[in-house]
Length: 499
Image 1: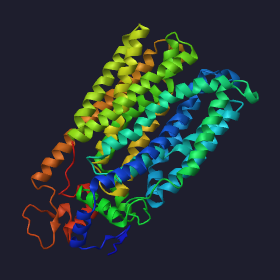
Image 2: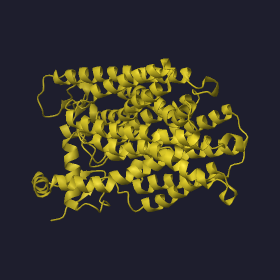
Image 3: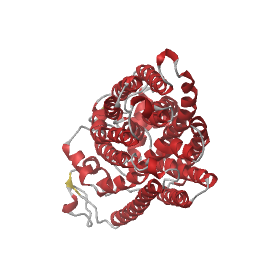
Image 4: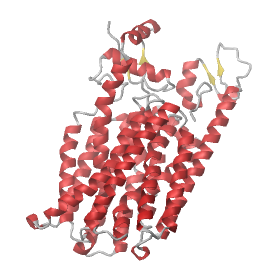
């Protein structure tokens, strides 16, 4: 018996055929297949993404500023201009990703930024630095929200946290690996007439180009597409079915409609999520770009400072994975966010008041324990409460994009005149974390209140042929429950938000 699934219309199989598929498929075996095919490679892509983006912080320690004749202020401006195209293009990139095959869109972005990364190694002046940073921001835009959206399209809400944490942990590995890599590559100083910092950019860019070409054949399509070949047809239909049962009502595919984008733009969750993402993305970029510099100003030389950043990021990687697993197990991501943002507040208060290198170094561990694990937990929390594939794509793109634009601010807060304790920079990061903490509380309160309204029937739609005294026309009139699900997404009265 053969089965077909249209990317726009869903499956036409009968309930009996669905049940037959469900009973014949081993769910754990299918999940293992998906995990092996998707998560490791996406982690590799994001490792390179984060490594290439932040390697300028390592290159700075090997005389980048002196060699191209720029001031500290010009260096900060070069960091800043990266974030404008990077953040502004993310929502559009997610829409394109939904319409184009992920293997083509994600791999092409990677190929282009690999070329731009290599060009970092041949710049001669300030104008060249500004140019390659703007191009890098343009090329990398969409990779992180695209990967997140892609993962949310394959997994149930109770499974996303662990997978997003595993993929995002590569960012912490990139932080650790960049220090080791920069220290090793710096030994090539003088080879081929190029400096150590030039070799850092050239070799990392070439590695990205090579892996981007391989990526075209590794990244699969969305589960709604018959082009997914690493699963059998029965397994693919089973994946779609289990997602639909988990309130992923658009898992079978949906056509792009302006209404779906408008739903995202007018949804209060999108705007509160932007505040949550602001609360961790601002600190993330401040931390990743300046950790080697902060450590070096505590009395350590460039190579030692890079090496001392390695255990910090290794600890962050461990905590990210632990929190991701914990979030899926206990199912209450709001409380985890409260705790993590709270730890972040403590960390930066210590950094502000500390005058001891040892105490400050300890606070850096607290900071990485809060900043990095908060990101996958918050991403999974927001994504699980937004239904409709295009709506989710736009919401994630906007929230992540707004969070990333704050990198343009935090790229300028650690000024050379504030060394070695950087009180101003730490104070601004503290304010960012406070915003994330407050927005997380607001998000949880509103989700809880909305669930209560739905339990009371205040959001019930009028469904033709169904007698429901609580239904009201202001909530919409539909021919069937299925029509209401598809049209309203997470606004559907039967949808329940997760706290």
